[in-house]
Image (cartoon, rainbow, N blue to C red; front, side):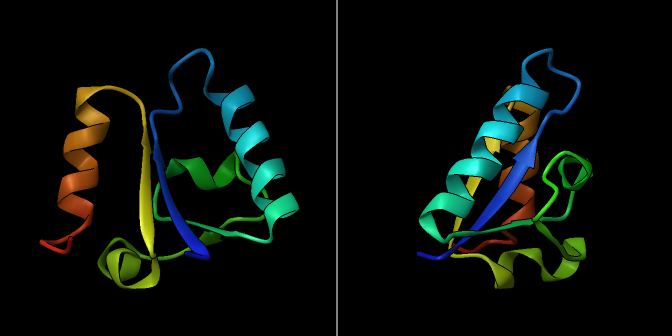
Length: 81
């Protein structure tokens, strides 16, 4: 797994710090972060793709937030495992 999809609720108070740490760790491990959401403004090295292409461009999806973010993640996968 090299391409990690990231969906995050950026309104959460801890979102900025967590996404910063995630970005640094991904770079350290040679992983590519991919997003189709507002998280792209906080993930400076993430690849931004359209909602439509998102599921096809990732190997795994990381949803950071609450129930709403999880539901958004399920929809973003477009029926994929």
